[in-house]
Image (cartoon, rainbow, N blue to C red):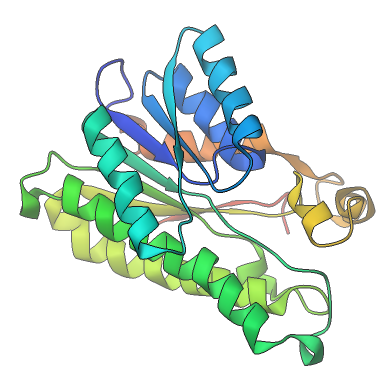
Length: 252
């Protein structure tokens, strides 16, 4: 799908803040009608929508918990009412408080995997049903927001989170190959240490300031830098790219 005006809807899960918000703004600027998904913070999502509209773009809000199958079904029904789905960005994700793995409960593991893995898989399944030529679709693109943590494992901090992103990497590759003959490209971006609110969720708001100088590029990244990679993978410039991973991690 092209990113030109009128070519369809781009759904961004977790689009109200951080990387998701940056992606939503960039895709709106490329001409997509952007579905901004959020679970709780409607005010943040609405602020993103206001930015998009002020810039001459189109967008809409859609509340859903991606870990809940019925909620995902309702979200995609709202997308269908808006127009033809052209792109999905699986960005919604969570981390819990930093800890060593011996202190990680089953309840915590289940919640992390429910959102980060099952949520992305549920959304991708629904997107495929709409975009794949097997189902009469016109093709499209899926970008999964993984993490460089899938490669280094996040010891002492978020091993469960890193494992969930490792699952996303495997899922990305499998779905990409399965849908390659049917017009749906599936890729992933693996951000590293990025300046977003997620670090506060893990209990260390200053994590980027602490770790940024240790990276080969000597700084943390920005949400806009990650969004640029996501937008490229969705665009026609990446028309021969599927099953690929872009590491936006400052060389780590």
